[in-house]
Length: 188
Image 1 (cartoon, rainbow, N blue to C red):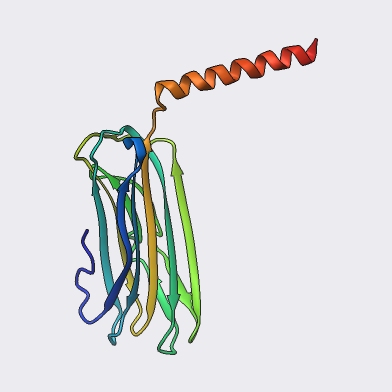
Image 2: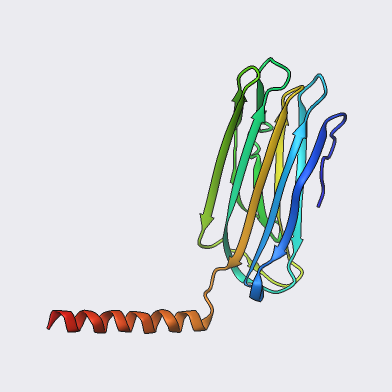
């Protein structure tokens, strides 16, 4: 995990920076949450990445992700978190292939001594990327925080196998058979 590239005098306090592999190695999750305080007199760019190497193959991948931001004005002139140009605030990758992004050309503002929040999520049935052992999944956050202000930024990235296990397909078939059988008895 890489935190706070080029922070200068800005402060970042990691609250949670965790990565884990779910049971049965059929899913993996990367999660990040941190408080950023820009105590400088200029806007500050924050560039954060969280990374997980897979310990089991997932095959064809799918999954979901979330992004949450709270910005607080602590200096009295209004506050903002915004994207760096048209670059997305949040981007997720499987094996270096971008599979999702949120917050392109984005600005979240708060009034003087105020606070504002933003949340977003995605859910994809297929990323079109096959992941094997030692492949990397990661999420990247890059944003600008106004001078003298504070932001809480968090996100999750979940990667699952897009192909259900053979036993799951069998259970769906059996359940479907019972549903059809039950309908036939009702219609007699």
